[in-house]
Amino acid sequence: MMTRKLKTIIFSAVIAIVFAALAFTNYAVGASPVYFNGSTRKLPIYSVDRSDNKIAISFDCAYGAEYTDGILETLKIYGVAATFFTVEFWVRKYPDKVKKIAEYGNEVGTHSATHPKMSKLGKGEIVKELTTSVSAIEAITGNKVEVFRPPYGDYDDLLIETAAELNLQTIQWDVDSLDWKDLTAKQIVNRIVSKTKSGSIILCHNNGLHTLEALPYVLGELKQKGYEFVKISDLIYKDNYEINSFGKQIKKLN
Image (tube, rainbow, N blue to C red; front, side, top):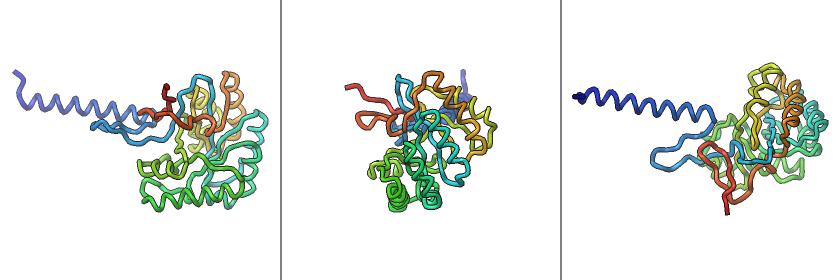
């Protein structure tokens, strides 16, 4: 007969395995955990459920602008519109770059004002981070800012709720180029091309060491595979949708 001690050990082992499996799944897909009480943490959009091969490539702009012109020219050559998430201090330091990004037909979203970990902020601080950065962008581009990416990919329910109140959709990514780790151009290309699927949102950085070098191959290979690049605001659904536990935005059936 199984002793109480042995039962306790087996039960503890099973619980540990379940938690380990959940942790691995959330790490692998970048999704937030589902709570055991049946409720779920509010999630940003990591990708979009689409069957039309539309995808989006994005660039976070916080430090430096050395490669930005080259990125813009490459996008133009390949006929691709991208989304650039800009921090307010970058916007104020490089207003000519922000204007050029928009003039080249790309979308400019906010990446906050000061690049903080926003889950550490109160609501008033979040509102300030978003409203001042949006105002700085709109003053230069003349275009409405619709999308927001949290610095470090760090968020909580309060952040997503507050952004929504300000008519901003919170955006993450499901394909990370890891260009910020100074991967080689070939490594960046292989990562992006192998992981992209219909509805993907690709994360790059405007000042990655080998991002510009990799970009023509990324755009060329994905186009050859039949993918169509669009701005994130054109990729996502604006209404009648839900976001599943993996952060995928799904259109609700009427």
